[in-house]
Length: 312
Image 1 (cartoon, rainbow, N blue to C red):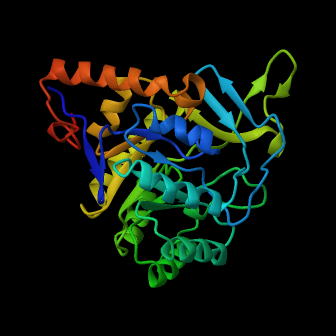
Image 2 (cartoon, one colour):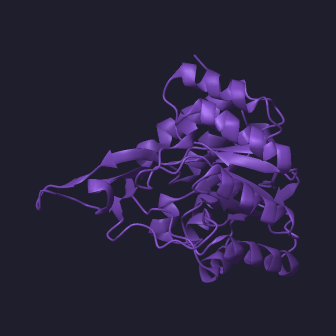
């Protein structure tokens, strides 16, 4: 028998797969679909304190090997997702829920964290420091001093399990610097990577961009970013305190992709573009492919190969 269970902090996942924040999680209807799927858990849309409409359409497009988007954080506001999470905890007590936050200022993030802490929420909270698609707002994950300032302020007031979502890094010195900062805090997990920010795709026939916001610049996802996701998971697993777990995100199209992210050290894996393109049946297909690979290799559990990438 193949055992696909895994854990993230205090939460038990029946499978290692879940949605990526921003995909199939904006409304209660979409979130309910995840509850009825083979996902091991779910994460809500990255929320701001008040609802946001986001950027103008078209703001998402499928590409030959992935996607491009500049959504601009459309969401229903924190209370919408917090109320859903607390209600679902009563009806599905064994289904892990992550609340994702993307406040537009430190004050807004602290206000949302205070509201969560005062509620009955018993899942995990994710602070998104890596949204690349809000015009005029730089990614906090690339400002290391600001990242440290925010985490210092957050952990002075918030005492529940907390993780952060990171942008992709591309230099070994960046991995060293970021890990040095993160190891100073009692983080439950990191989520790596968010989309590769500010790519551009062109429609050759019309000679135009394929999305409207930001002059066509948007976050790249799908198979295009898989090597970057693998590298970030691997680099941080080598550098972070063992107590900080890793959610691996980026480029999962097949069971082989899922296997490789776990091999690099991911405890849980999220899918975005593939979920957007295929819907919730993608979970079952990818998990079946993973089981087949594990059986062929003689692995019975995810722990049998997690983090065991060999080098030449």
